[in-house]
Image 1 (cartoon, rainbow, N blue to C red):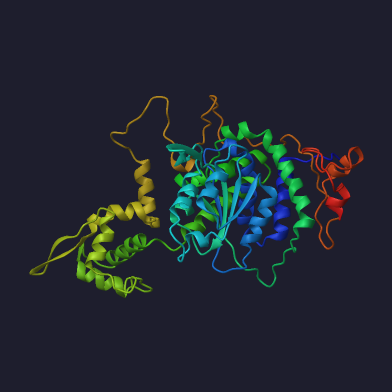
Image 2: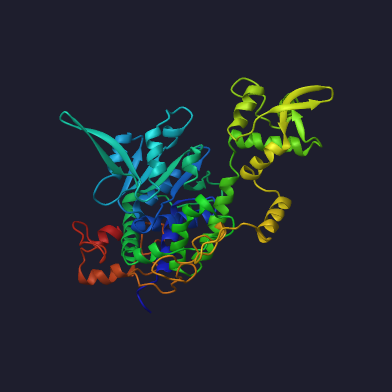
Length: 465
């Protein structure tokens, strides 16, 4: 039997390793974490990099442990807690190897009792795009000069509560929770388990080195419902899954659909809540226009309504007008019996509902029929086909390729790592890569043939102690 394994088996080892120490809320979350780890080794290939957000409502839910295990597997990890913007900018903008920022306790930066921290928010927002820079002024003697600091890098975040919407929209969100009575994980001891994780990292480096060009050319097909910003977030992860092959393409798309769907079920912004409640009020009425006073009364009476207590006061006509004005909706004079009153018309809200609220099954069916019907005045450009968002980036656009989707490679260049049972720390069953056993005969002080020769501890000291 060959001592070498494929990339699919390598990812299976990463999956098994992370699963020993982290109690994931779902298998989809586990798959997403593994693919995100792999994507950090291919940063030169991506146009955008997704943030990974481990969030929970309470402490002791495994968020910090997830970052600790990630630190063993990602390139150039920088563990950050309560750091200054200047420190973060300099780390990210360093000319040498790009860091992977692992930012714990992010709630101290964006939580309700924290300051705005707009500089860090700006860095995290802009840095998901290749080429993004942060402009700063620096003083050299008496001369003030400008400089541009690169902001592009991989970032994983962990914290309590929630994050600003601008960061969440750029993130793969994993909602962690405390372990239940039947959920068991292995006790993590860095001095014991770090060698295994670092060995896996070296093997990921070796595999990724030959995949950068293929990943840059990949255009993975998106599953239904993954569009726009969500497609930007998941494109690197699906490209990796397609390249690795096996069952990873199916599992990755299942993870994308599940996690994106879960993220959409979060508490909506107050503006979206207002539009939703207004639609409920109009749908329950036969009127095409309703007076403002009536709308305010019905808003407060809705079940679990926030409109009776907005920071200590009830919603009024000015608050309602100010919030709707952001969407281009204004009140107008209405005839109510023999009198006139200010109010809102359904026709003025219909377009806003269509743009900002999810379609009902009936509305979705009508929209699909309208899209498939004949269109007048369509603009077409010779040589270019219209591709809906659900199939965005399907054709390869580089090097004149016409294949659809990423190349699914069943047998990528072999990575010298084997699966098997070895001796780990007492009570665990972590496998020792067999190439270490082969290398022991050639150079007992060399930990991994893919990296530099080790110094100090021998192989037995590092892996078997």
